[in-house]
Image (cartoon, rainbow, N blue to C red; front, top):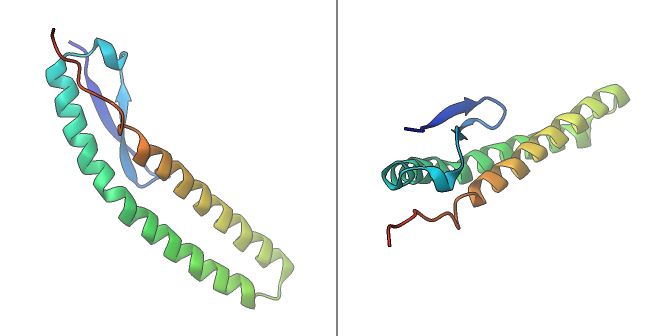
Length: 105
């Protein structure tokens, strides 16, 4: 029987599902268990995003006050990376909204 593993993504700060087979080929019970676990993970994503936005705000404040060009570039790079993580988290957050558990007819 196929399985789905959830592994921690250190960049995103959440666990993400790693499918070993196509979703449609999974047993309905496994689909339901996976969706239940994913809903718990999804529920934590907005708080993770809020935390990253707070980090960005602090970096932007630091950038505004920074006079050293090289350090300004580093701050800009950090802000861009955090923004990229937020974008990826929103993609993950939307993942599963339209996924359905297959039913037997």
